[in-house]
Length: 90
Image (cartoon, rainbow, N blue to C red; front, side, top):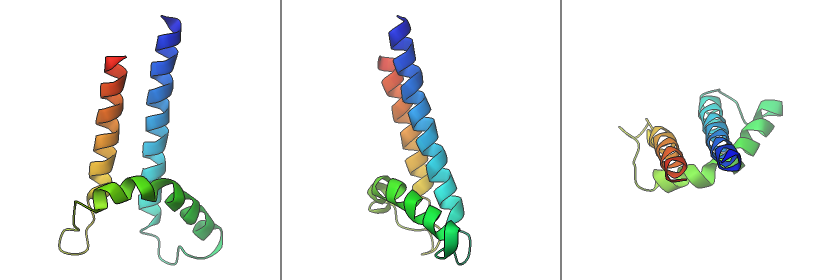
């Protein structure tokens, strides 16, 4: 019983941590000249972690008006829904 509760908490923690990483990555994309210095290095590391997942949604959701990309919002919603669904099944 206690082990299952710990597994559920760990899954939720991982999904919440990944959601936060995606959120920070998206916010950093708004910073001008983020290619240089320490901020650039952090941005590239976060991109390595986030882009494979976000690209799944970018394939199917085009930017609105050619500029506004809502795929990270959809990706975050799907991540949260799936994590809650999986934890509910366990």
